[in-house]
Amino acid sequence: MHYRLSTDPVLPHYIAIEARLTDIKTPEVELQLPAWRPGRYELQQFAKNIQRFTIVDGAGQPLPFRKITKDRWLVQTNGATELTAYYNYYSLLPTPHQLNAGSSFISDTLLYVNPVNLCLYAEGRIGESCTLSLEIPNSWTIACGLKQSDAKTLVAADFYELVDCPLIAAPVIQHIPFEVKGVQFHIWIQGGRRSDGNPTFDGQRIIQDFSRFAEKQIELYGEFPEQDYHFLTLILPVPYYHGVEHRNSTVLVLGPNDEGEGLHQDLLGVSSHELFHAWNIIRIRPTELLPYDFTQENYFPTCFVAEGVTTYYGDLMLRQSGVFTDEAYLKELQVLFKRHFENNGRAFQSLVESSWDLWLDGYDKGVPDRKVSVYHKGAIAALILDLHIRKLTNHSRSLDDVMHIMWERFGKPFVGYTLNDYRSVTEDVAGESLDWYYDLCIFGNRPLETKLNEYLIWVGLAVIYEAPSLDQPGGIRLLELDEAGNSRQHRAQWFGGRLSEAPHEGHAELIPEDKLGKNVVAK
Ligand SMILES: [Zn+2]
Image 1 (cartoon, rainbow, N blue to C red):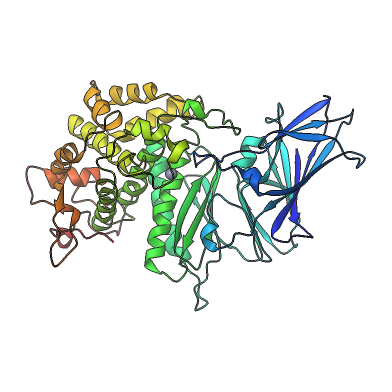
Image 2: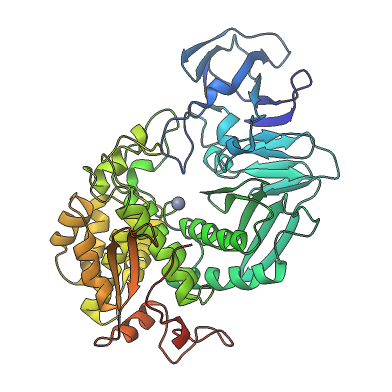
């Protein structure tokens, strides 16, 4: 399929699409628009954004067609060997809040496309190569993970690659390239100007911080799945925090552009998380999602691995690589604990049930006490498992070994894993049965405070519930405990090194004395 995107001349808030299919050998063709996008496991019904739709043959003669589902068109080819579908896609989002890391947008100064929103595929031909041409001014820059065949044309090996490669095209995009362990990384920033005209981010600081956590992640897995990787970043004037993972890229939408240090921290947090996905879910993929079925729900029970383990490692990698101080990491942990225990710490559903029901209400607030977050409870479950393995083996093994084996066994050969596969890898690494862990943390719905504290105390931390008082609103707090046993030593090893060693030359001491305050305050 060959796609051409342009501004709709009649309705400039729509992207106009031509999708041309050649080498047709059948009397009928079925054209399908995806009903959902990888990274968000709910039906989004992109077809509702299409306003007009026509199909012609190679000579420009209309071909008869009709819809056979909400987003599938049956075309009579009448012997034609070529057809072109002309349609448009609504892309003027009414407020900046609706522009997110999974949508598409067009204006005089930005073309932002998630191809999964608006590219049709022909049934039976999803594995064929495709091209995507953009009608944009010559002076614009394109940022995208796809290879280019010319200045305005991108090439994908198949539809799966196409829809895993969003793009930004604009007259001005800040480009920050760097290399880590032979992998070319590119940070592309659109809209990155503060209201005083200065750049939102310090490029040198970004390169230093990104290089550290990228190197740490590549060390964990032993290799990077791709030759290059692109952080496609849109900066908005309003508060925003969203990222979506892709094959060799990620889209990040952040704001406000004037936030300063907070925005840099947000960029680090979301970028480390999304990069970890380059292995965990893009390649280490639940078998139920391999291949993606874009027409309907793809139920899977393991989003606590895909999102929970990734949420846990996103921040931990920032600490282990020395980008975050102990204090910065502990603040993130406290935020995680607050989000889980103050919101759905006593919810009815287990992690496996909540994963399954992502397709039902996974991204809504939901009714009270019904579901748990696969992100937050999933990250806490990952933390418990990591500390359990470390405690059993005196840090000679950890969740790192689990993920490394998951990569070698399922990600690198790209064969998909089941819940039982993950369970058996975790039990192999622990060297013992983890029935208690799966019963309590993965299949169970009992609160986790007690079990979590068993492990936090081992590293000199504890979660408590503090009653409200006149001075403060109360709630979940993370405390640093007085030294007991080797708790500081264990925490230092968990954080990536020994007490006396800094992870990077010139970086602050791992646990400086002035950070050993009693109370860690959430940001
Ligand atoms: Zn994620």
